[in-house]
Image (tube, rainbow, N blue to C red; front, side):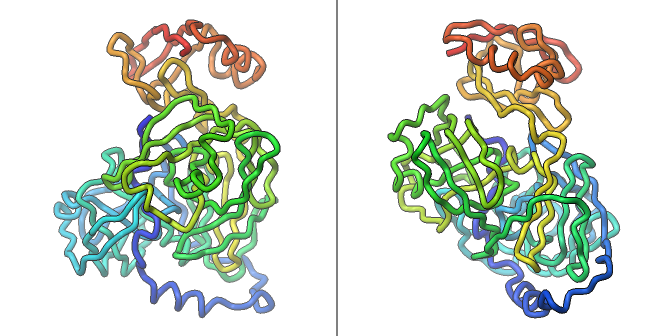
Length: 406
């Protein structure tokens, strides 16, 4: 499976706005001096979702062209493609090297830009310019927002809110997860067990730009021999970032936990394999907690306190993603069962498409499968060679296909 929007993940993208960030950190008041009054709400921004990804609509400088940018907490800056940057008149200020998944590359940087989020402006923004980016969005907007404001993401309302740091209080009860922030990224301690009884402690990026539930990077996989210690891959694919492609294997982990959150059993995990630049790549972190897991929570990032609050949302108890017959299926935030992507070569004889919504799986609707998890488990436990009848809707058209479990 080729990751759909992980192309936009940039680790240590740039040291964007380092002076502003350091100054903001220095101006933060200690806990004893925090205001007791409610923090000022700066703006509420509606967003759209795509399999857990958060997509914001913005404008840049004087351009009237609306852009769809992926909100990517696994990137410490903004990025656009060269063609798009040229079309809206961005000026190159300098060039530098950027670290991406599996390697690095040279990029251009445009400084001093104004990003418009509706009527709210983010001034003096630096934007990385890459030769090409994923075509599904116009670019990425990294965690720059969270450096300047308390950032609350509500998947139930599909709304991102920004607040002043001083006086902010969480609006709902939830679990507060402490984070560290080396190199401008949000790091959470975790523990992964591929097989029961063999847990490996690790440090993971809180990464809304990763199209996975969890991905483990090559150095961590190699060090702990995760691919050869009882792991049973269900399919293989690749992850790509800015033109650098790395092979991957995906399957189930016996358990995963991060910080003080409850243990998650039988969770999908993707492991980076060797090959190419990934063998020499050392990001300094062990992996990413991605959007398919993060989107089960409404979350609030508060860098002043170095913490993220997580509140389970309506999708928290939805079944994990599953693969059948060369396709990856999963429930979106609204409870629809969607074709997330391909796990094998596309079968030209089938009408089933990525992005299609399933109206029925072997006669069971998505609401029925959500209500009766045991029925879904029975369907998924069928032996290899079992045929599944898939009824789907894509672009308003209804299709019926039969796929076979490998």
